[in-house]
Image (cartoon, rainbow, N blue to C red; front, top):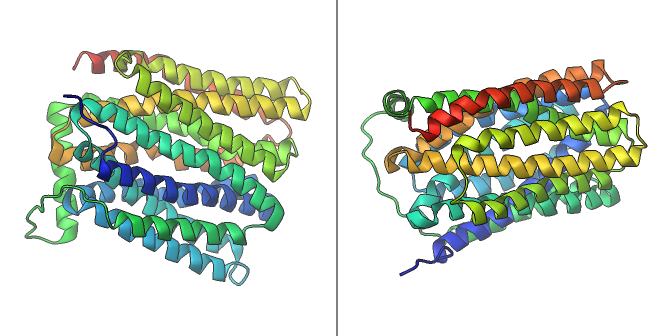
Length: 412
């Protein structure tokens, strides 16, 4: 008898994700753009983005421990309500407190909450869907993320152009509040684990348990996560920092046009997720390096369009289309990695190990963001140099990764 994927509780999780991630998407679009417009400094933009991203890296590991110790529904509800409250405080503080310190504090809080929140969602999927539907379930969660990211920047770009940042803050706070209320009605199986020591000791013990498992049973996980971390430093960071700088400052496009590019990025992720659902049984982890090569080629094409000094609108479409392609390949890659970890890890360790691997993989990203902020200022007249350099470095990493993924496929 074939089981259904969209049973009640999984459906509620998906709907809650759609609402809260839409609020998250318009917020993540508007805040960096507002900061870049206000300061005009690529260096400052890169540093603030890097500072705000750091708590997400650290708290992802804490989120993994919580996901295995605390009811995952309670985590989702509490963090969504907290996010709504922070946004409203930011709404009333904007213009009354110096911009840069305010942005650093608020973005650190929001990214930290996001880092704590996502492990709960990832760890809930194996509890809400059957094993034969696990990859499809992960693909759906990924599609929800990218679908919200598709609509958020497009709507956010139009709203930002017409009315500025304040209506976006109100809409985002409403999304998180509504999502939290709806998530109250979700039932996620939870078995309370005994705790006889303090919270920090529990975190340390749980992370040590996860480390020992990976060290003895799956040491290849270390190579994979280091590889992804370096790739994030080299390539993901250049796209996060570079896209708004290139479109709004180098090419002189409007905020609405930038919104469409961000929407194309999300659409690429959505298409990648849909493709994963159809080809999940044909995907081989040993061929994952090809997906990284595709991401490298996409950034190289962006740089070439700027090097050839093409008309601004041509370069804009090159950047937009290559963002779509890179995100599609990246989504295929990440769904493969998530599913591989979930299926090769004991259920009581899934949340912690997923969170630890994700947070370590993201470590390179804030470092890269700060570096690229400086580089885009240094090479302001020749930004193609930054893109081509990042693409070449990513290409070399992709070729090196072939050996690691072959070992992973063979279970070594």
